[in-house]
Length: 325
Image 1 (spheres, rainbow, N blue to C red):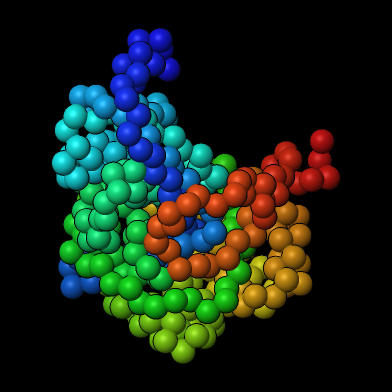
Image 2: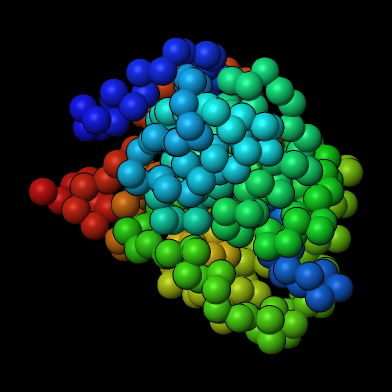
C-alpha cells in the first residue's frame, strides 16, 4: 500500500469483522435441471479467512491486488448495507489452491461479504449473500448450509440437501489450471443438455445417499457426473484415479467440472486413505500435491480458523515422484 493510500485510510476507525468461508473439491455433480445449470456442492475443510476493517471515508475499498473480485464484493455489500461514507480495508489469508476448481475465488468473495456484514454489525441472509456473490461472478454455493443444490449463474435455485455422512476426500492436485471466469463465458448448454438424464441420475443417487447417510450412493452419483463431463473438460488421469479408488475401497470420485482437481471419496478410514495417497504419488504422472481433507457442511464462520496452511497437505517433488531429485 502506498503512503497516499495509507493516508487516505487515516479516517477514524469504526469497526472490524472477521469470518471465513470454505473451499471445495470441485462439485459432487453438475449439469442441467429443467434447463437451469446447477451444481451439487462439495465443501471441504480448507478455508479462506477474511477481515474487513471499516473507517470513516468516502466509500473506497482497499485490499489485495490478487483478488479484485473480493474487493468488489465488499463494495457491493457495504452499498447494500447503507455505508456510503465508509472506507474499508480487506485482508485475505486463503489456504485454498487457485485456478484448480476448488472455489478459492468464491470463498474469498463469500468471506469478504460476510466480514463486511460482521463489521457493520448487520445480518445478510443466505439469499442476499448468494445474490451479492453472483453479482460479481458465477459462484459455487459455499454460502449455503450442508451439501447444496445451487444455480451457480442465476441464483434461482438454492436448496440445502442435507449434511454429509463422515467422508474423507483425498484431493489430487495437478499443475494444470483453468480460468473459471472465462470457462463460464463459453456457452455449453448443448453439451449439458446431452448429459441431462445422466445428471438427474447422479443427483438422485447423491440425494438418496445424503438421506440415508450412505457414502457409497454419494460416491456412485459423483462418479457418474465426473464421467459424464469427460467430453467437456477432460481429466486425463480420471480413469487411473477411478481404478486407484476401486483398489483402495473408495466410494467413488468427484471432480472440478470447471477445474483440474480430482477427489477420491472414502468412508472415513485412515488406512485406506493413507494407502491411496501413497499409491497416487507413485502412479499418477504429474501429480503436484495431495490433500487429505473432509467433506463438511458449508456456510460461513464468524471467526476464521487457525492457520491450516500445512494441515493435510503434502507437496510432491519433480512430477509428483518423491524419489526423484
